[in-house]
Image (tube, rainbow, N blue to C red; front, top):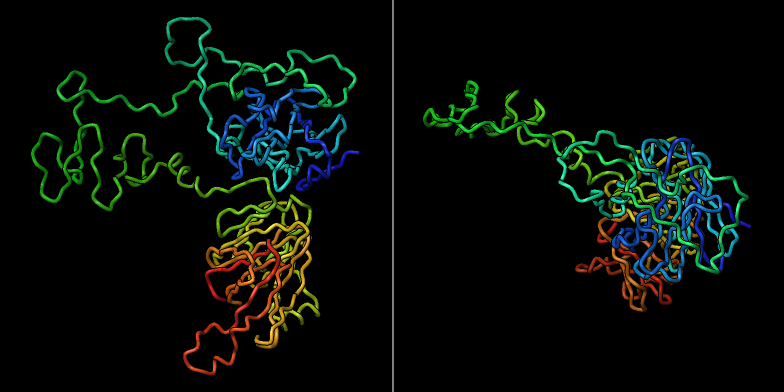
Length: 541
């Protein structure tokens, strides 16, 4: 029986099926719209470092045929064959996407799905509808990703822009293809065609097919007949036969030649007209005819004297609104990845509440921006929780974030680090916690030690399945635990819960009573089996 996934659900492929030769079917449709369905083979940095692993209608299979485009069949708009044990080690993720071919938006699509079939039997299905999207023109449907073993994630993340923008997001380049002439002839001049018609959508038959009984998804006992690869450009939108750059005004005729127009009357601040002698001392030299003269240093050019093509009223030297402004801000645009938690930069974290279903607990006041319908509520610890928090110093003032939208979190410019737990546990000081999934269990844990004020140190232990966001002062270092691993308790941020923590026997508080002590009053020693770790920041709280 197939498992029904919701957005954000993840599972190991081995928990779904023992097979590795899989059929992936995608069904998506909308009245009057056509779609391009593709698969991106990404490296460990989630980039398309090898464009041979961009599988779409113009490139239907990877070099070793571990990923193949099969075409429409068995009720699916598009289908793929994925052989996991043949995928090269450089590929860490397969992202299945659907993009609009032409005008429209994803909110117009009807009920659709992405499904996995093994041996002719459907094992998992993620269903979606257009109500989950707004004005997006692309959607990342699902991912196969390698994390120790191959896993599947239901993504359902909308993406602004079409196939070109999605390709650039994954680090690919869009090649501009030129259409070859049908027969040898003289090269035509550059001009738009008299009547351009959009090429047919990929995979669409020339006429509606005769209804047939649904066929079961293929079992890969024998290789399927490959679907013919249509010969059409990479993007189905018709090529725009317009200049790529604005047409510059015709250059003026040289001075003294026919057609030369005398220059306009000179402005006082621009000096003298060329050919009338040396400008007075302190005034800038005149510019060549046909070019605007520079404004005095530190002042904008007067209205009407900007260079050709520059908007009036903009100071000389400032980038033009549009391309220059867009390029300047491109470095800081939002980074969507289709994951629940996404670092936007070192100091800003985004959580998508529409993925995963559960709410998020975050430090009060840590929200800097949000999108969508999000509710913020007070998360009380109760009388016992407040008492324990006050007694141990591990009290957290939290708020609950629920709803459908994206919340951006930050605090005092601290560096933020997401740590994903999958049934394991980690110890973190409450002061170093910014936010975490509400599905995680957390409690105060005691670290014994006779050399510590009050007889013990306390920390928070998080356990379960979810993500916790920790914050540090500066870039931390992660060290493996060995029998000789020591750290200052004021610099340690977190450690694996399986580590044994004891107070270093070389340090005693009574050293404070003597002048010239080192100042390192409390050190912690960590012990544990291989695989345990500690996280230390370059700062002492």
